[in-house]
Image 1 (tube, rainbow, N blue to C red):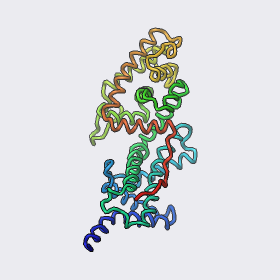
Image 2 (cartoon, rainbow, N blue to C red):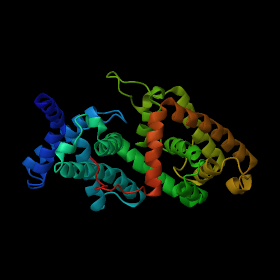
Image 3 (cartoon, rainbow, N blue to C red):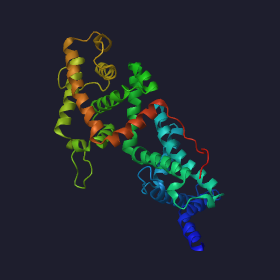
Image 4 (cartoon, helix red, strand yellow):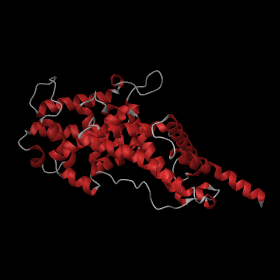
Length: 340
């Protein structure tokens, strides 16, 4: 019996270690080197716990304290007015999700410290622990991709701002977002692509690269290369977009189209409303303009399917993040009802 008890105690050491670091955090001054060291140690313990006990997700152990620090930096930028408008709201949602998941994990560890003997040595059998780890990994995985990576962060909040502006042009998009209508998930990739096509040199290109990396060349170190190395088919689509803008805005081919002119509003309405009633989309535009837009949107639709299907997991994660930002999300409870 004593050997069995010893084995169980050893199995619990993973969580005991995390509990000890969490306790230390409560008794050292915030911002001090001791606090930073204890916090990093706690995050490392949580990551290790995640790899051992989180059987419902990937069990990642590579989510570091840098994610938390990046999230806090974003929240500081929001609080000091460095990020504003719709971009600020989106940034706040993404960053606060990371912080709230960490706070919920700390709250769990503080509670479980009073009843360590109730912790099942088979850590994956502890319902409360697994629930907190699932939430932590999901939030921090998004934080790693869309908060810590500066270019991706700028791309996401840029796309959210674009969608917010699109809601003003086409109020039907507001209803779609509020209801999470199934049509919304057809509209999302269309507007993401149109946003990229309108400004292919912006940070939004990083987002498109992440979803269809095979359409961009690789650099010597194997990473996705610059815009100059994009696939010829993608460059053809950009040229097609610019030509269509010129037709709709009655400008000569080769002219530098306005980034967001009359044509952009037509594209947004067509992306949201579909073929629909031409009168609602095109107003007084010529039949030549209508045909040009329909030809472009057929190509955009083909590419939108590729964006969704190349890596469905990445697209599903991004679309969930985008919808969360557009709808305001639901704030996480940092202290949910306790279960071991």
